[in-house]
Image 1: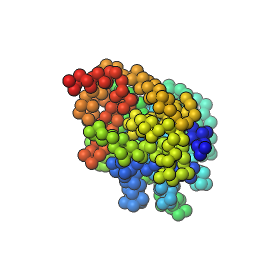
Image 2: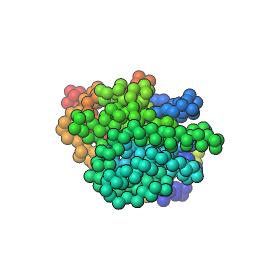
Image 3: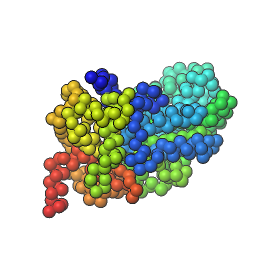
Image 4: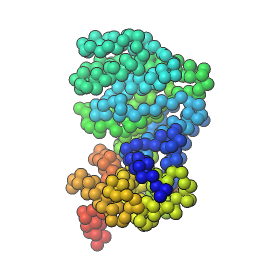
Length: 443
């Protein structure tokens, strides 16, 4: 048997993005640009490497949770590195408290990650402002934090953030202290860290510095006392500060912001006039509801590549029966994912937990049914009404209540030559509630 079960299981892990810089991961990668409706990563890369290599750019990237953004950003990193850029990629979820985050937290996280990456290359920069600031912070918080005046910048930032991560109270006090100093912090990051770093990197033959901040789209969508939501406050109200960094930056932002009434303000303040790049789902059906053969073929390849990474795409199709009892069963799984990468991997992962391949239709149906019930349990009557509206109009309005639909993956966004359109998550289309609504509407 050609199928290495253990490796297949690891390759289907839905929570792990592909690291395109690694040759072993690259074998699993499928480039969906042809069916996604545009070369999204190419546009980000071209902006940095071709159009504006020497003048800092700030670009925004978004899409549904789990639609493959991290994998695409890691591809962007690998491609920019080939073009001799020094790229610092980090997942903000590992560094920040997503339910409670402010601009100073994001700026400090970037400073910490950049300096850590430079220190690994033996580039040691000592921003004087930060040395002074850390001393003041420790005095102000009256909490023993051994920042070590001689320590590296990244160490100082890491120690302070680790301390405040444990205590919301301490975090609030630190924020109150840093907030009025945001302009100075920005100035220090630019003049004492990013500018000398870029200079030193160029002296070593690099083209420049790029920072990719992933997972910032997972910031909690909670209302603030001002009436704005946390994402609106961070990316719109304070967007101008986030785009002031003197290096190339790519931020992931919540998809819902692109439907907000303030989307134009977002485009100008944080995007500098350029709209966010959206990574849509892979269409397995067309607007009309018919199956889209090209999209479906690519989703099939995605599954088969995880099973047989070293076999040519054209030869993999002959091996379908090693993994499924029939082509129809594989197609059923692909269609039920709605072209959502992580959902498809999750369904596969679940099949593997049930039985050894080849998976029988019965096993696949059981896994789909479980996914359907799990997703449907979360939907309240008001949300069903919103879902029905989206299905009828094939579009999403800008109100905050639609955030839930996008964030909970109740509806998916697709792109075609006419623009964006929306459809219900296919697993929800199989619920009794949805079927009876469909019957009533078509009577």
